[in-house]
Amino acid sequence: MNKKFIIVDGHAVLHRAFHALPALTSPDGQPTGAVYGFFKMIFRLWENFSPEYFLVALDAPGPNFRHEKFVGYQAKRPKADRKLVDQIILVGEILNRAKIASKQKEGFEADDIIGTVAKKVSKNLPVLIVTGDKDLMQLVNDRVSLFLPKNGLSSGQIVEPSQVKKDLGVGPDQVVDYKGLVGDSSDNYPGALGIGPKTGAKLLSRFGTIKAIYDNLDKIDSPAVRKKLVDYKDDVFLSADLAKIDCRVPIKINLGEYRLDRVDIEQLKLVFSFLGFRSLLADLEKKDQQMNLF
Image (cartoon, rainbow, N blue to C red; front, top):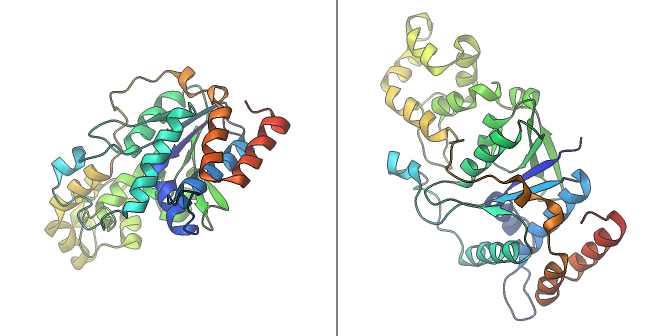
């Protein structure tokens, strides 16, 4: 299935590449495994989906508005490996140098950039979001799909509305409320302690929303479930608020800046040659000559 606009969750793909691939180094000893894997994935996306428009969304440094709402947000995440941080910076520099569109906004996460751009451009173009983060399933609809990399970075799965229901037991429009009920350990927001995925999906299947659940507590048969919902009501609504992607990030969206034919292939060749990415150079030559993408 071809998609005309691809948005890549940059940090998600870089994290996956960093942990899935060998620890490569450049001729001058610089760690480059995540950089190599990132661009290998990008080339595969270009080849498989032939997008006309392409964007890499990145997390901005520092806290975002979710940290202001909940001081414990992402508090349990281990500190990023310095070798990964250096490669994230390097990828940003390469994207800029090669004129591959990227975007970040202080105070927001890449998810919010993705949601904002996808909401606007999907009115005219089908969108494919590349991410390992299932939170973005809330954005899926008949115009927006996800591509979840699998087996490291070698393959992936297209996620459309029916697959969200199959994976989580709820529809895309219920993902935020689902996260509110069950929480998220990776982002460290609590949900209702003791309400797991099956119970959360069952409640939403019956009542539709967390508001409707709380409006109908007397209709829930299990006293234990009722008590958990009552005891952790504030946590449920806070968690849903934290899980919700902000699709109104104040950024300018100019479709022309995302065109893939703007990419400076010669700059990519220079960078890859310096970093010792011989196989990527070969891929680049092949794409430039045989596929005429650019």
